[in-house]
Length: 391
Image (cartoon, rainbow, N blue to C red; front, side):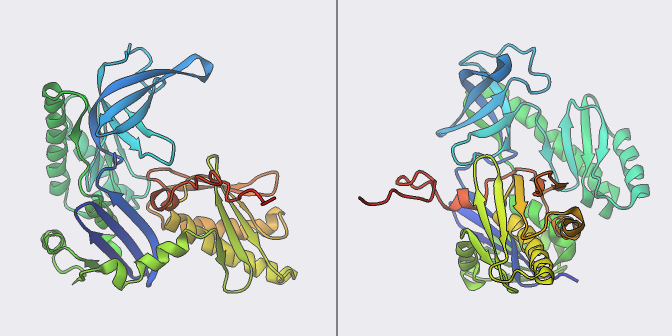
């Protein structure tokens, strides 16, 4: 059984969340105080209208404090709306800024709670596909329908069926009131303005992993008190003045920024992040025997799934395994990737083997990858990793 430890390092301007599985760093989330975080709701001001391919349109939206996002006019329900430069508009960040790409904005606001996602105007009740108790899921869905009022929709999250429905019902009221507060604030504020800041993502992260958590390490007594209030003595809590340093997280971050990862059994994997996709190559090194290739590829599959989570790689991920590209050799590797990525809190889809013999994975993009958070493009080589030779 996997034993989980969460390390939460928080200061006034930034925070870091690290998940250890059996002592190994599996996931990492870094949050800067001035980010336009996914889930935040703004009263933005349209700063520029731009023409897109296929006679489509988009809008750059000023969110305030130097932040800007992009809204696609093809968003469902937006095509008939006439938007103009200088107009105020309520938007929510669906994807955070990544490198040179602006934050992605939507108008369909969704509020995420511990047990529910509130979807104003959606008019239906749904449930997470990860809920295993289908009978209880159906029961709770019916109860949510009974308590639905007006034009609103709901999605039951995985944790909803693990608690008494009274807690779910209380969150319905809380989320409904939060949205009403956003609407009222939008009428009184001057754009650009922040209408709703997503609650500390640590508690959402904690809720996702609480059932399998053995230990929490943090440098905040306030966080300790809040967690005790929510979870009692369900897991150990350790107070440490510098938890990332004490548990070697800084060193792990440095290693996670390197392009090559060595494999214990020989060989290595190379990870190249580009604007279009992430390319991963498995190199067997000097060990090219048939049986050894299968062993190296299997070890690489486990390590690739680990690196995807750790580095927060997203979008299209293309893998070139060593040696054979026949499906009979690749099928066990696909099964390993599916098995390991099922542990991920972010949804991934192992698309299979392409006609070119490459394995393709699609992972939902929610937050910037670790490399974007910790590094910036080199002004000398302009991101190529190469410089001109001397004369």
